Length: 195
Image (cartoon, rainbow, N blue to C red; front, top):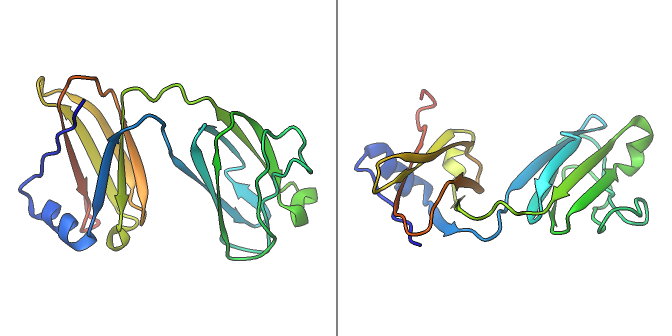
């Protein structure tokens, strides 16, 4: 299978390529890998429950207070594996969940106040026909909207359209890719914050 990318002769697109120094890696993926963000503040995890696929990453961002993430098997013996970090403030902690199952976790200083979370990790069976596009070096455009469209080159039909809010580094997944077909992948970022 091959993916064909078309570059629009559009000033906004050129600006995206030149100013952001975007490195795009497109892969027909054999394992979906998405990053899920959990904010840690005010004695809560937001969201406090997630359902993700095996191979996905959960990133906890402590934006307020002194907290930790404790998903150890010592505290939660039913967890398929241990994860967690030390108590502190202003930290970011990530863990890749490769084993399917149910995971419980808590903030040790505040679990009696209900600061707990749950992650359900499912087997990753839905990877055939996915296109993963990684964007890195997007610092000048963080917070702006990005749209990505995948169009079947032979039929002209749009296969998938994805919307994402730009982060410094992020990934989007498009679905519906078929073996033996060629696709145009077009994307647009909102430079003026006015659509």
